[in-house]
Amino acid sequence: MTCQDTRELFLGFLHNELSPRQRRRVDHHLAECPACNQELQDISEMWTRLGVFPEVRPSRDLRKRFYQRLETIVQTPAPVPAPDGKGWRKWIPRLSPSPVVQLIPLALLVIAGFGMGLLTTGVLAPGGAMRSMQREMVQMKQLLAGSLLQQQSPSYRIMGANQSANISRLDPTLIQILSDTLNGDANVNVRLATVDAIYRHRRHPQIRQLAAESLGKQTSPLVQISLIELLSDLPGEQSRQALRDLSQREDVHPQARESARQALNRLEGLVSGDSRHL
Image (tube, rainbow, N blue to C red; front, side):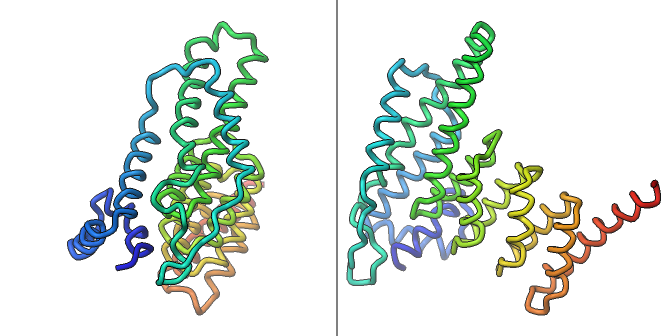
């Protein structure tokens, strides 16, 4: 079992969703691979940090240090892959998380501090100051989600999708990253998590367009059906056309094709009902 194969199973391993055979294979690989073992520990700790914000108020200069460190990371060239005898899969800094991932705990602390500040001082703060704090917190969440979505590990990318779902407003940059992930990520679980994320923002015009355009690009029946469910909640010709096209394709899994037909019938039924009331 290669390192790449093992990393693909990390999420199921942490959530006890693997078969006994898969778990034995992962355990066997972890026992012999310190790099993967360390990465699994890093991911487990990161899941904990993302799930529970520390109840600590950050110091005044914590936000400043965050942006200073971020600027340094952005200006640092990306690592160059090196051969390890099994192809160009293994990256040089594999024994430790990437710089952006190392930045996540600091970002979480700042975000948590912002939230506490809004709760405890928002009533007393001037309207403009409070809105500025809210905007800055949203921007930081966007940055964190976008960074996670572009990590090598599928588990980190799923974290990024989950974070995107919890952001109140998506900026164009993060929407583009979500689009690239949904249409180009090789991992089905990552794509499914991305569909869940964009479902929360389905009323956004760009998200509506993204879902409709992405349906015809998907090859996994699971992702197709998830997008069909999303589009069935978005009445409009764009959704109906995407469903119509998929329902007529012979290369699509029968279950996905039938789901598209049923969703299309529901949407067309809504149109007919609206027409009768005119």
